[in-house]
Length: 88
Image (cartoon, rainbow, N blue to C red; front, side, top):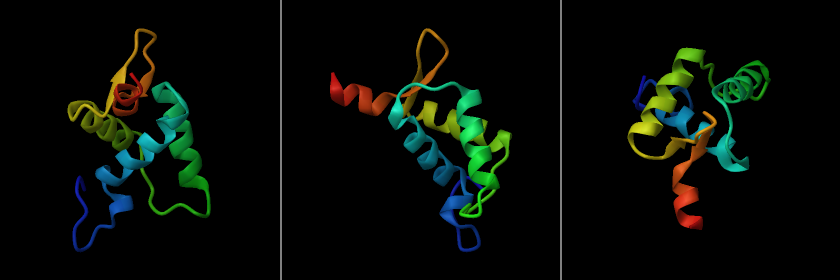
């Protein structure tokens, strides 16, 4: 479930979900609730490639935080740490 495999598409893996979350963070810092709203909206659309529950969103955010791709500001919002480092 974490990594894609022979029977699991990348869009169904936590790695793929992490990519979607990083894409959502391009617009600036966002709360976990706002990210979940975007993922659930994608789940309900007809263009959805895979269904991800709230647990998967949290696991993907944990993974992104551990590898240093995201960070949390003083207001509790999540932001893309890699893009912020490039702009400084």
